[in-house]
Amino acid sequence: MAGAGDGFNVFNIGTDEYCTVEQSARWICQQLGLTPQFNFSGGRQGWVGDNPFIWLDCRRIRSLGWRPQLTIRQAIERTVEYLTANRWLLTDGR
Image (tube, rainbow, N blue to C red; front, side, top):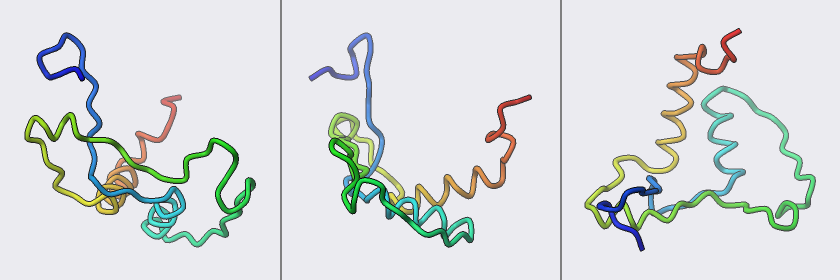
């Protein structure tokens, strides 16, 4: 496993918890005041090879002492708040 002193490093930054893609979509919609109907084209679990969970292995960054300050839900909600307040980031600049 590569460490922080290597020439190139990739670190996942996140929490030790996970959520489902459906949960994250519902949290986002709740933040935006939306109530869509969810339909799953590949059945309840999605299509073959689909990953229904959002989870990052953060052991490498944690080994350096980094710790998350927010839960996964708090981070998603804050991201929605930020993007809502800075809608220009969601445009293609044209």
